[in-house]
Image 1 (cartoon, rainbow, N blue to C red):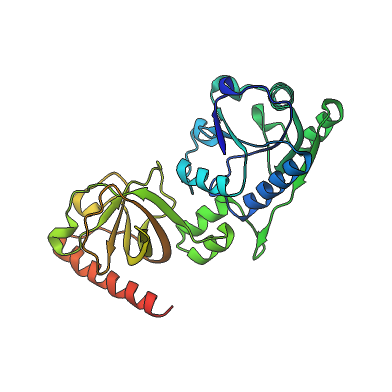
Image 2: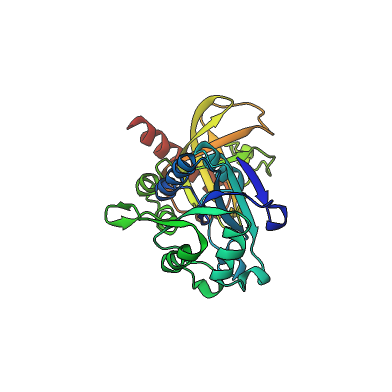
Length: 305
């Protein structure tokens, strides 16, 4: 998959099949759109182009959200689905004032040579979010392209969406989040040095940067960790570590039966079950007692599988 960062780096295309959106998490609804995108592109013998924005419009207008996937994770998911080009448009003040009609004609038609467009049924674009499927239908008549509306997928009468997945993760409902994602929720990252407080109480941890301003998960979890081709079980804490008055959200995992130096290695943490919310403790002795209980809970969880 080719990544194009910014319209200034986009060379005019003679033709393309396009979809637009943030695609955070690349969930089952997104996959439906993307698989249709790549199939239509092959049918027309054209490149498939997925357009997203950085920052997202929500971030630009001050509505920061927890991200289900980092950029690296999204790249991995999109590449595996066969997208040819990922165009990342820099969302700034000037771009936010671009009307929906100008966006379609100046960028989608003139620069990308769009012949077919696929969008989700809730998609809006352009200044003041005035563009929608109906506008695309009208513009298609005079700009030589076709447009296709991909309907939402439901899970237990709830629309599969990034916002509903965020809500499920916040509530600790890992089963619903997994069903909507089409896979278990996981975080990829490189193991870094931490403060090493855990080893002083007998629970050394591996530490992985969240790579998000806001984490979609928060609390104590039973997890598996894929590391060096081997899968381990453990207890994961995602939080601010109030016992040391921490402010930064960190991800730490205590792995069972593990004693290796793994700094700099990549790991995949898969969230299986939420044990409890993060809470404060008077001292490290009280924290150690709680971690012992968390370990027991996690071992019971895995033994019951």
